[in-house]
Length: 149
Image (cartoon, rainbow, N blue to C red; front, side, top):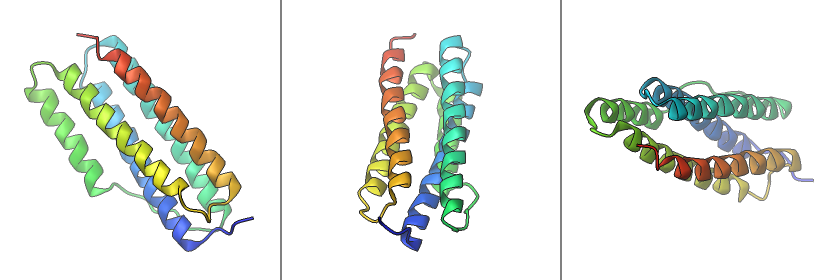
């Protein structure tokens, strides 16, 4: 079995931080739309990321690692950009969906990068694979919502 290294702990903490960022971003998107379907979708995605965060925290702590808390600079900038788009876009639902798609694609890449680490314990790899697949599934749903005008 692989060992849980400090490097793995750092990567998981970075993923956890981005998970918090995504949760806050989806909450912000839900606040910025009047479309009932989109609001419901964004709220569900925020809840999903909240749950992901708790799974990641439990996994990090189970290996005796410290939990880093806080917002990333990138996450704050992304949410600010979503606010600006919501204020000035003629079609803010479409803009928010585009941002959500971009963010989800980036999340999948981040998960794949961490999963590429051969030193991941099997429990960690299982959690990350499950979360990555849920994000991929959600990405398909976002693309279906693009038809909403």
